[in-house]
Every structure is written in structure tokens, then in C-alpha cells.
Length: 296
Image 1 (cartoon, rainbow, N blue to C red):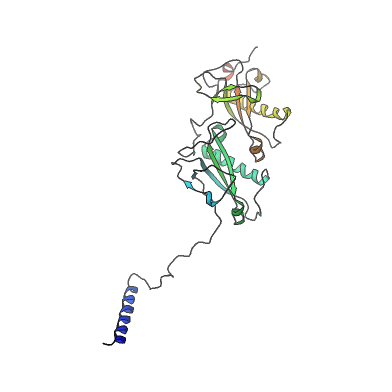
Image 2: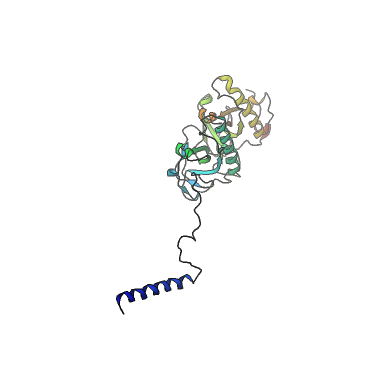
């Protein structure tokens, strides 16, 4: 058989082999027409219910996004991801109504996530937005991030933790604020957490939501905060919220910082403060007998 004939036989055999393969399993020999179409490309959007090793930052891009299981060591937990209107041309500026609306949404979502007002625990809420490049690419999300902190006083540091914060404040929790020892003077008073069974002179009583007004800078600006916390305190201890309350106890107020206030945070932490004695139990529900009117 000549070289040309052998080549023809080989070609026919190869075609027959391919034809035999095509007849089995429904394959047709076309390697491209059975692939599903790829989804249309879209802007980067983070997920909710995941954790991050890195701290929360005001803006986040895909290069800094590394979600991990919340059972692993982490510093941030994303409790919700919301969206701005798709037709918005530019990111909202700090202190803008749009950003404050986003914070209000994150505030409510975070409290629902942990099972109580998140300010009742050693927690910090932050709102993150897309980077400039991310916004230009179509990103319109805002991310609601919760972190555990070592204190809710000044110079708080984020804690690396394991385990989700979901339902973390539904019951008793080491994250909950409780009894405190007070030090310092006036508004510079410092608060240090202690076991309620040890001698203490202060206690977290709840959160008062301030109205939408400028950040307090003058003496008169602080008066509504004290009045609001008085009401929270009276309800917590179960004593009358009247003019005699100031003869029962003092009060320490902790509003958010000016920057957070501008972003829409209006939650004021409230503490009772005993200037004349210490106690060795919580005063929650103690009533007038537990918080008597001081005669001197």
C-alpha cells in the first residue's frame, strides 16, 4: 500500500473513531456549545453574616476583602449590607442625611442581630462604603460592621475574638455592661467594670436616644442628656422620675463622640453614680428602698 493510501486509511479511521465517540453519551464533538453562559460582570459587593480579620475601615475594596468563618479569630463581623439608590452619582458625604439614614439602618440591624441595643455591650458599630473606584464601577452598598472592644470608655481597642455576635446580648453575657467603679471628677469621671458582688458605686442603666440636635458643647447643651438619662435610670431602678431623683443618685452620661454624632449616632449610655456609698449588688429593680433619698 502506498504512502498516500495509508494516509487516507488513517484519516478515515480517525474520523470513524471520533464518530463512534460522538454517538456515546450524547457528545457531539463540539467542545464549546455545551458551556453555560457566564454571568454578567457586576460591581464588588460584600456579604453579610461573615467575619473579617482586618479592622473595619471607612471604605473597602475587593483587594482588602477577605471574609472568614466567624469561628476563626477575627476583629469584625458584618451584620448587614444595605444599598443606596442605584442612580446616586457620588458617595454620600460625612454627616449627610443619606449617610445618617444608612447609620440608622445599621443601628437597628445591629441591635436586632445581637438581641438588644448593641450599646448595652462592649461593642462598636461602624459603617463602611465602597472605595471611589468601587463606586465608579457601580457599587452602591453600605456595610454594617460590629466589633468587640475592650472598653466603651476612651481609647477603646478592638478585640480579636472567635464566635459570632448573633444573639450575643439576648441574655447574660460577658459583653454586657454592668456594675462599675467610678473615678475622677465631673464629666471626666472614669468607669471601670467590676463584678456586682464587689463594692462599686456606679452601674450601667441603659441607653437614651438623643433628639436630632447639634453635638453638646456648652453647659446648657448637656442638660437634656442628663434629663434623658434620669428617665432611663428611674425606670431601671424602679423609682419615681421626679425632682427627688437627684437626691437619690447622681448620673454619668456617655454620648458618642462628635464624629459619630455627625454620622447619626444618637445613643447615649447612662450610668447611675452613688457619691456617698458603695453597694455589693445590682440596683436593677431595687426600688426606693435600694436607692433611698439622701438626707445629707
